[in-house]
Structure formats: C-alpha cells, structure tokens
Length: 230
Image 1 (spheres, rainbow, N blue to C red):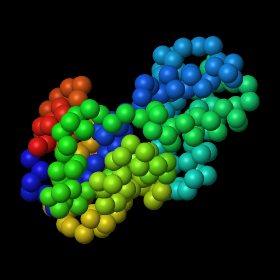
Image 2: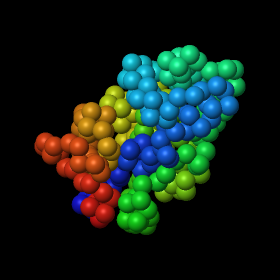
Image 3: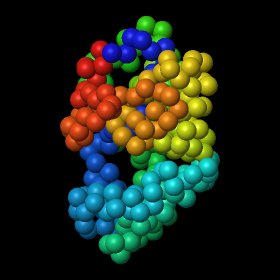
C-alpha cells in the first residue's frame, strides 16, 4: 500500500501512541496527595470537555515556544480541577503532572505499531519518515523514551512552529523537510479533519487509521491496524 511513496508522515496521538492508562487516571493518581477525592472517569470527562472548550492545542495558533505551551496546559489542567473545588498547592501539582507526561511511564506504543514492524521496514527501504503532530515540545522526549524517535528523519510538533493541523503550513514545512513533492507523500493519522483533510489540502494523499472502526469509509482510504499498511 505504501510502496509508491518517497516520504511518509505520521501523526502521533491515536496513531503511534496512546496515554497509559488514561489522562484521568494519571491526573487522579498525582492529585490524591493534593486533596482530590473524585474519580478518574470524572477527570476523563472533564478533560475532554475543557479540551474542546479551549480548542485543543490548535488554540495556540501562531504562538510557539515553551512558555506558550505551559500557559495552555496550566489553564487546561486548572479548569479541569475547578469543577471539584481546585487543588491544594496547584502550582506544585502542575509542575509534577507536566513532567509526568514527558516520561515513558504514561505512554503506550500501540501493539500493532510494534508487531507490524512497519517503521523499521520503511526506514530500511529508504523512505523518508516524518512526524507531523499537534503536540508541544515534549514530543521529542516522549518519542525518544518510547524508542520511536530513531525511525524519523524529522519531528514536527505544532507548537514549535506555530501551525497546527489542519493548517497548511505545518504540512508544507514537512514537505520541505522531506525534499520530495506533495504527490510523492502519504500522511497517516487518526483524525479526519486534522490528518485527512489537512494533508489533502496541500495535495498529500492520506490514510485514516481507525482501530475502533468509528468512521464510515467515505471517499478516503481507511485501515484498522498497521498490518494493513504492509
């Protein structure tokens, strides 16, 4: 399926990695010493709600740099816990949780990414591999700690360049770094708007990874696991 491409870009969250065990579980574990008595499921729901209210990492727009990233996450985490009356010494809690999500402990490489051995096979075939992800600068550390960074020729985190998918600029930068034309590129991701429509807007073909089969096949290529990409 991928043999005709000279460069392949990958999304990260929901495509290569997922939070382990869940955002709510991680938040709750570290929040107990700070007075939180609610449930992980409650925090999962609140996280999704506040993420949507803020507009996700895309809300940073053209802002870039670690301070902008930290301000975004501090506001988000604070709003999540405001629903339960806040936390004791929130500043200290935020530093702990911000660091926790930069570590391998809370990230899981999808089993099919490992068992398919796709990244190694593509790398050996000489294809240029890149990451195009709506993420902050911790992405580099996370990919290194999960042993994925070595497969990629470049890693683009949206907050570092001030452009988040589906914005064209992050894809155009990826094309520039790959050194090939858009017609020779494929992008693989799990979000129709950010990954499929975003890539298509600059002439890049895209494949949707839909492990839970929640989308209807509607005019674009869809796979349910990495083995189907071989």
